[in-house]
Amino acid sequence: MPFAEDEKRAGARYERSAPLCDLTGTRLKSWNIVARPVQGAQDARRPEWLGYTRPVAGPVDVDARIAANHRLSDAYNILELDAPEIALRTRPGQFVMVKRALGREPLLRRPFSVFEVLRDADGAPTGLSLLSKQVGSVTRDLFRAQPGERLRCLGPLGVPFSVVDPPTRAWMVAGGVGLAPFATLAEALHARGVDTTLFYGGRSSNDLYRIPFFERLGVRVVLTTEDGTRGESGRVTAPLARELASAAGQPLMLYACGPTPMMRAVAELSARAGQPVQVSLEPVMGCGLGGCYSCVVRVLDGSARFVRSCLEGPVFEGNRVSWADLT
Ligand SMILES: Cc1cc2nc3c(=O)[nH]c(=O)nc-3n(C[C@H](O)[C@H](O)[C@H](O)COP(=O)(O)OP(=O)(O)OC[C@H]3O[C@@H](n4cnc5c(N)ncnc54)[C@H](O)[C@@H]3O)c2cc1C
Ligand code: FES
Image (cartoon, rainbow, N blue to C red; front, side):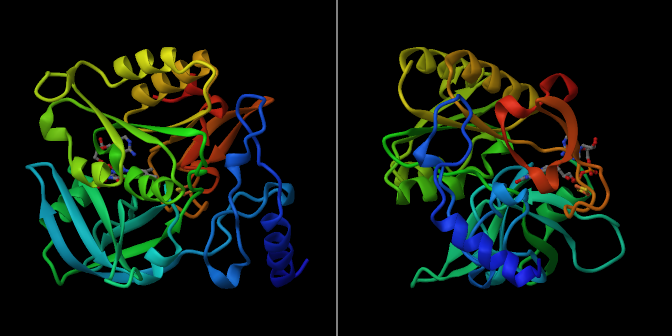
């Protein structure tokens, strides 16, 4: 089928599509993701009935000017990039592949969630921000970057979160820099009037940022730190487990991003509570476009198979991931 026709058909069918797949055996009307035809570049996925999971709107590759670099601590910073073409297309949970525009090193770009979509006074997207934690060469470049410099920036990429509607409540569970995909998700949930909670944990208070951003959106924030310097002492899964027990039988959607052990624990807790969860995995990614297979993860779709998480993820249903194969 010619590509344009295929897109047209995809858009038309998808707009009137019924509830999408569910995680618990219950059909969730709140799982509708409306994808419009490609010319609008507005929305998320090709419909599953066509067998596609790639974004309808293709990514764009730009040399994005750095508008600001906010250093939050010795390790964390937020970079603001002028990239309206990408910001316009971005859906909650999608990511970009970036590296410095100048120089040959490093060869490969690195993946980063779009943290915020930046807008002008009229609400038009002007750019995006990245929340970065220094771990190696590219995150060090991002930390040191100066306004006016440029980053090669390809995106948006990947399957976004499915955004629920009321009366389903949303619980976002973030560990450290795993907060990154939740700012755009919180905005989307706020726009739909969803009652939203953020469970946000870090090793210490130096790992917790931008809490007022979420509070301004009406998000209830539950904080934990392992050293007890802010919020409840211990892991973020402790208050989550307590609240899951008291929310039995209520319509909930969990979203998780952070270290793999945390996401595995959240997936186990939600499975035990009979609640669905979407996890945003963070495997090493070489290209972000499906070409290098560095990002494969094992999923359990009846039988186990490997999928490229840059194409079929980074967002997965928690019960689909073969957690035993993830380190
Ligand atoms: C979809 C996606 C979204 C992401 N979003 C963010 C984000 O918003 N903010 C952020 O700070 N980071 C994010 N990451 C992780 C980020 O991509 C890595 O930290 C980054 O690639 C490190 O690059 P580097 O050059 O600084 O470090 P490198 O020199 O490449 O690596 C330094 C060390 O970190 C390890 N490492 C590198 N990547 C990963 C990884 N993905 N998982 C575990 N260990 C790794 C390496 O093995 C090495 O030991 C995301 C990853 C994915 C896949
Ligand atoms: S990152 Fe290259 S195939 Fe996924």
